[in-house]
Image (cartoon, rainbow, N blue to C red; front, side, top):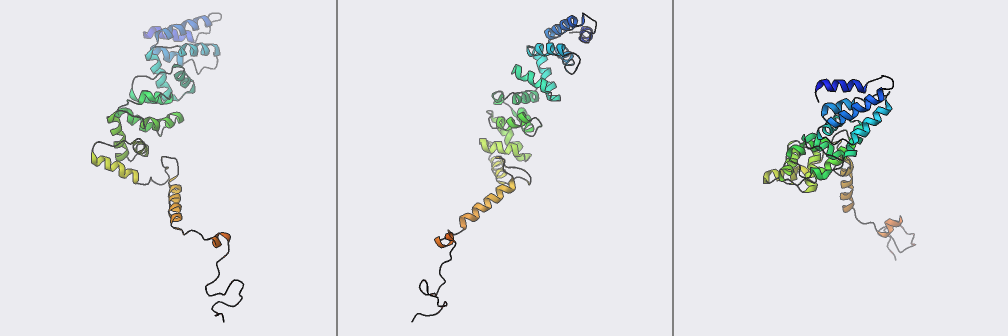
Length: 261
């Protein structure tokens, strides 16, 4: 769509001519949706924040749910990544569509939709975005990113997880490598991954299972001490001490050390 036509349609979306505004607005929406370009979809998205046109907003959203143009869908996906708008997130769910590129957009949309199958064949570049997403602000994305890291099929992607774990001391990558059994082909690098898994996480961090580091250490110490503690005898369990050495028979009141005659 050329710039001149786009300008005309934008003006029609803001039309306030009595009796004509609804008709002109609906025609503009239909034409923009049929075009499906990023510029056309941008013009439609500009309607959504307007509080004065509820009917037009409903018409726009219904049309966007039926949008099939890849360029227009990709633009909406990018806007969701940039703005985190829940209305745009609902459009993503309605489509159930993962954009083919770029890689960061593809990774984030697949995680948002729970489409981990789309990420199983991810390459090293996608792995870097997955590791970044583990600490992202979007809760659903951050929760699913570690699961995607554990389900990688490509050898190069698994190598990249191990590299990030060792070289960047990234706990999310390390947890994924250890739990999924990823090891680099290089024996030296594989040893570094194993040794990294034995190091305690820095203070304030949590282990992969979610337990705070200090709690895990205290639990391990208690378990170790408990394994060395002698078993309590029956008298100790009942709260009664055994008779002192050197006393007489039970009930004998003579002091300890007195020999029976």
